[in-house]
Length: 452
Ligand code: NCD
Ligand code: ZN
Ligand code: ZN
Image (cartoon, rainbow, N blue to C red; front, side):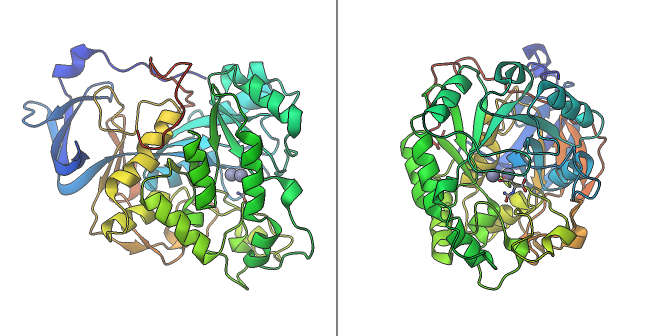
């Protein structure tokens, strides 16, 4: 697993190979911009009047940094009928404007050993359209130090997920968090306390699922986490309530919200396609979460892309697996909200591009000299309804069917185009990446303030 190279040296700074010209959100406003890109595919100049280099002018379309999705499940290794592979899932990411995915360890088998981590890394080589950061399972008595030498981060499940048992509680949880704080890696946590699940009646729809796994379970799990050492790069996955997000923010802990919790509420009688952990909440809770996200007070958006097959999601509610796909539609759905005026562009750029890249220690996510030229071209006038049959994910369905989306027309990776007119045209040269935190971001470090 090779870390990505350091930023190109400054010698190349005067000699852009390519200039991308268009408009961009830069220094607090949307303005005409020219981005010079060097041979190594890094942004080397930002400004106007670049002569000599090859030019690509996108007119009044907008140049954005590509997004980083902290949370996907690509299902490899897994059974042959799994809804996704690294190949299909990363092409879906590329088409949806995501240049880096954080791949979760609950595969079959799960990533609980160095051998399994290395086997998963080998599957990425030559098959991924975008970069992949691999999380390892953070388990009590697991080989944490050897895993930390190869993984891009750890994932802790406080409630069970297929292949991985529920994490420890009480003093054992405190010991695990202490131990994880020794490694300079992000720890993402699935925060639901199974002790607060309600088992009265088997749920038959998303409203029942919300009752069975209430927001109180999330809140209790967060209580257990807030005693974690300050040095731990703690990050709470898929937060569903505005109050929980506010509490984490006040304690300087980063979190993510998902497009499904932002845009979908639990509906009575809806089928198992809308079964997900943590559950979809009530319309009033959803609206409160959206308001908090739109105000810029939630650090990140991440898809929790869980591409279960159509067949498995057609099972009766109680038997069907939990999870919804989303890596391909996350940014397009939110870009459409920017286009309609419901969401401010800088809020989206922070939550989808800048903050996730900082958490994962990657030189992407902002228009900055030295950053990789992983860029998108967006025409905010172009709105299309999500149609599952046009998506590239292998799972073949979407919970967002029919909702307005603005797909990027182009996606550039290290200065080369991998999506053109919305179609994938790249070669699968995505790499396994690991955090490289900038100097000054070393311990002791302030935890996330949600706004930087
Ligand atoms: C995820 C999955 O399918 O792997 N399911 C889900 O409901 N979110 C696991 C997870 O993120 O908890
Ligand atoms: Zn989860
Ligand atoms: Zn997940």
